[in-house]
Amino acid sequence: MEVCSIGFTKKTAEQFFTILRGAGIRRLLDVRLNNVSQLAGFTKRDDLRFFLREVCGADYQHEPLLAPTQELLDEYKKSKGPWQDYETKFLALIAERKIEDRIDHALFSVPTALLCSEPTAEHCHRRLVLEYLRDKWGDLTITHL
Image 1: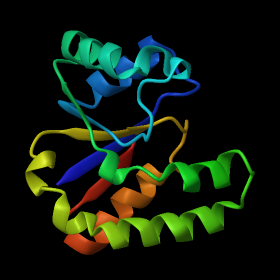
Image 2: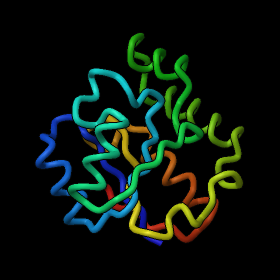
Image 3: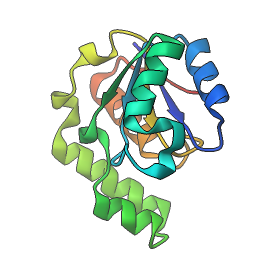
């Protein structure tokens, strides 16, 4: 099964929704810890739910099980910790959470994209989540939009 990922920063709403629509996304899985911040602009939870339905015919779901802890996020973002430390700790966190057993495959039964704020997947936990699930499930193809 194919699963996509997308970040919203450095994109206009037009760019963001055009990319999702072009990829045929029918479900957006929000893996951010905080999805109601004023800094999220057009991707605040309730606004995003409306825009996805109206613009893309897609549904919205927030999945905090796939988000980092506030402590881990602060250590990386606010304290400017190295990416490698964040990656190691985040992978340990999702392994401890056993996300491979707690996330239902059916969640990806329609074209789905994981959402976070980072503009690219290189230094974003959404990539780590998808690679982890691919390694555990063996049947994921990952596309970063």
